[in-house]
Image 1 (cartoon, rainbow, N blue to C red):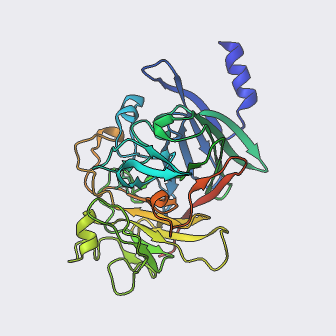
Image 2 (cartoon, protein in one colour; image 1 turned 30 degrees about the horizontal axis):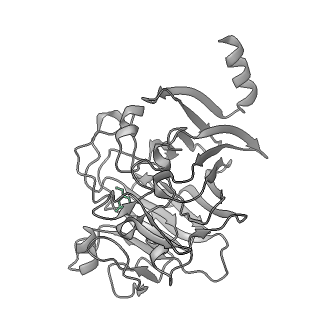
Length: 368
Ligand code: GLA
């Protein structure tokens, strides 16, 4: 025991705490890592699902609140169907009827969401125990996570090696790097599925948050939440967040797209001037506390989801239920159903190539 803890203290840099969180039903040990930065931002990460379990962020007066939804125990993460805080793969978001054709072969995936495939299937990356190594890099602290998904896993072709790095900077930026390689052509779309409530998880709904999205277009959906293929202008619609708007201001508007999704649950097409560089995607603010998060990404899209499926029946941290719209997700990603929509940017990864993307959450305090 003493040998083990001295080994751990050698490999765990200052600012990172490492502890045992639980054991999966098949006997795998799950750890929790707590990363603390001088900015006051502290992030709790589990090796199970690469889950971000907690994000402590200061308000205008320096008071900390946990601004992400989650659970207290591993058992609850095992049962979770809302992807709270998880890494999502192999394919984040929906694939129509769980089917796609690639290089002349048809592949069948689980239909785990109203006849469609969602977020990688029955046991996606959110249910895997990732190998985790803490690191320190030029004053930043972080975690390198790795997961190997075998050929045929959840119906997808090829062995896919996924690496994700969470790096917390001194001033409260969480830099998330995704890397994947394969030995057969396969679709890949990786994301982080944190839900934010910047007033504090469990404190109420997110309708009073203010949101700005760097998107002039979005992908309207059919009744099963699959994009129709159209890239529609947000102008003059409740989907226009090109200047900051309160989330709840138009969520109940008489609008076909809001009705189909039961609120916002749509992919926005990010405006980019230059290629696939890191660009602003979203700015979220909770006006009372002043807490904010700015999201930059290299991805072409972002799914804005207002927690419409949360219904108060599942308990969260501290025994507080996850009520309707008590958190919102901003999932940087490629567009849903891209493997069946040739006009969308391709999500096919070829052997010998690398899938790389970066998303940055910068936790900030906004002036009044
Ligand atoms: C994503 C989807 C939603 C929902 C949640 C998980 O955000 O877009 O429709 O499935 O994941 O509950």
